[in-house]
Length: 267
Image (cartoon, rainbow, N blue to C red; front, side, top):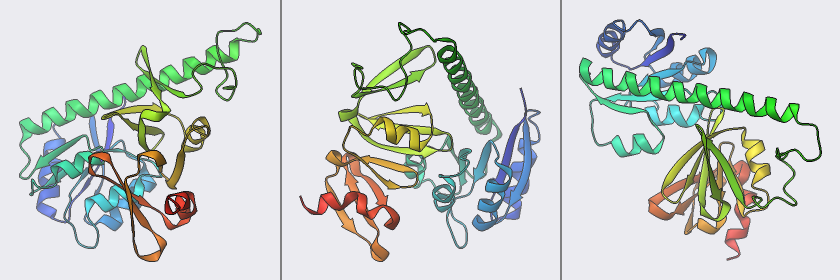
């Protein structure tokens, strides 16, 4: 297995040095960059495309959450927040952080985090392998009676109102009506439905095409929302807005996609 390429981001040099020292005990972790600001972190993440980022939350100029929001539409690494404050834990997991560590980092607690990271990467690799095998199976099937159904051919499919999401050897069939919202995490889509989060590998464009028969709107370059789930909409400056969904989920509507939610104003 290739080493896990990591970036450490913290505006406190001592915190960076201590964490890098602990990570140096792991032969499968390679720290490829150290960043002292959120601006530098965004540049390095986009340039180096790491597997993992250890990210401080409170930093000058922008927070760790701002860094995550900025890179979501590009290459999205796994994120572990490292902070001296415990009040951000729920918000951290709302942006799908792998873990949330308090300073000073406990080496034993970090070991648990590294194990979680390894499990996530292994699951991602398995998903990628499954996708390759599925494509190969489709390419080998050329007869009219094939059991493999083309992705775009939903006119006669009984699953045209359900999203098939592979989970290892199993496949979950998620009805469109149950989906609340979807956000992109690199090459993966996080589908939020009925209190659960399903992860599937595809592009935002492909997923938007699959959901074209449902009441879905793209509100950000990395976000789709089921318009029937929107409870209210709050206007923001510069033509942006925020949608409120069940369970206090708040989704920002980019001004570039504000036309997509115009139908909500008429209700």
